[in-house]
Length: 200
Image 1 (spheres, rainbow, N blue to C red):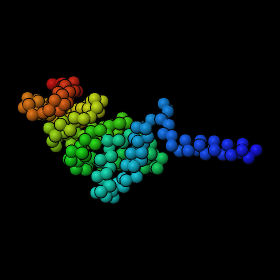
Image 2 (cartoon, rainbow, N blue to C red; image 1 turned 90 degrees about the vertical axis):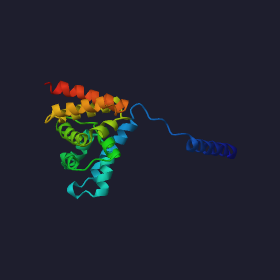
Image 3 (spheres, helix red, strand yellow; image 1 turned 180 degrees about the vertical axis):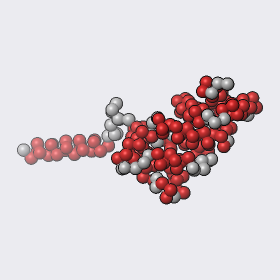
């Protein structure tokens, strides 16, 4: 009887040791690590934002985290907490976004945009684009195809005030030959989109 008990104890200890050393189980098909990260970043931004009271340090963190925000999730979090989701977009519009990392993060932050969110984000992207068109286009390199397409269409939508001048500027940039391949392709796509949105 003692012998059987000893054997059972050894088996339990062996099983526990194996469980401790075994690698973590892979994510199941129902789990989406990227989606979880996006939700975390949306919550992270919500927690940092304090409207006009947002500190310069937290403001920088918010801008650099935009690449992983999901605007539909941010809106959901805001509503749960009885906050106004558009306040963040209004705040962003009035920020000086001119650093390379800041601009690229802004360009990547188009997930979950629709309706009024898209309208306001379009105006933010367009303002940054018009401040330095060549830099803005060059920083699109590294974004995936959908992100670039989203940015192009949002910027084109935001150029409604002076489309002809922006078309002329793009032609000049393209013909100057100073854009790299990715930036040139983006400029040509933007020019084509502007022609479709605002034909002469």
